[in-house]
Length: 445
Image (cartoon, rainbow, N blue to C red; front, top):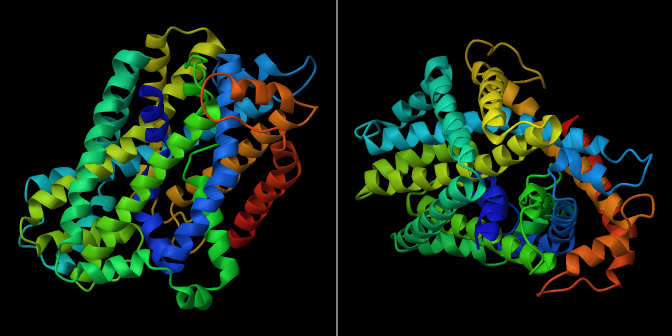
């Protein structure tokens, strides 16, 4: 259970809340959800089993796992350093955004939004971004708390806290979803979200809907940088990896689906468009909570949920970063924690300053900030390329090899990988991943 909650905590993040409901509504509601589940099964789950298999067979973090399993003279271990860079790059902006959630939880809990007009709530978000002190302090709190928990060890620290957070997270989202669904007018939001709307899908395009579902299904699981593999390296061989991967995918999908049950009924009840992405979370929803009976309580619960969702990912990635330091340099856990708390705080500062001191710097043109560049590098390059490396390493004779991968994945009780899947993961899945990489670059540029 600890392994499932830790791994699901890594997968469950901000994207489950502000991205999944938005694109589900945009691309035909229930139709999109069906496509999403299909691609989750045929793309996300197989790559997850590969990351777990490499972790469990090597008993190392990403920076050493390929080196442990590759044949003499091979260079697969280079992907370990790419994955290591991906972990740091992800934390360079994820810690800051989690700090936003923490600050909004504090503001909601202390009643800072009460009595504010719509314009004033919008200004509060901009004022937060423009204040480097607030962003730095909240980021440092998040980093320090995450590193402290990891310093306690896997079971006493990371597992214990994640179990508690995930249990509370699941309880909170169910309470919020029940409340949202019972709001006057909320039923219209449920229809918009859950009923298949083929007309809406035709309007945005069938092909675009399929690509959006493929993107969401793959990126929701945080694959390719060893954040899942590190937990694979800790577990025993009592259970097969396919069954565990399916359990984690189900939990991740459940949180994404229930997030929609919170957001769509609430937006429709207050005649608000749910297609605003991040501004929905930080501007629109606080306004909605303001006009809702007991809004301060519901708003506080919502931002507790958001903070937990983001912080569970941070704990998982921090554990990978700390383990990499231990594997690569032979450091103790305490030393790796002390070094990384300083390194991650320093590396997170550009994202903090990108909204204030360095706000004139637009790395991707337009109104882009440093966060957008960091997010692009992780989401469009490092995650899919890292996943492709895991895939090719596990299925080709030039890497670990399909039979060794399948043997490791099938060790233990539970769902087994059939031999026929070899043709699919060798010839079809790599093409799908290459398509995602190329499409992501084309869309950006």
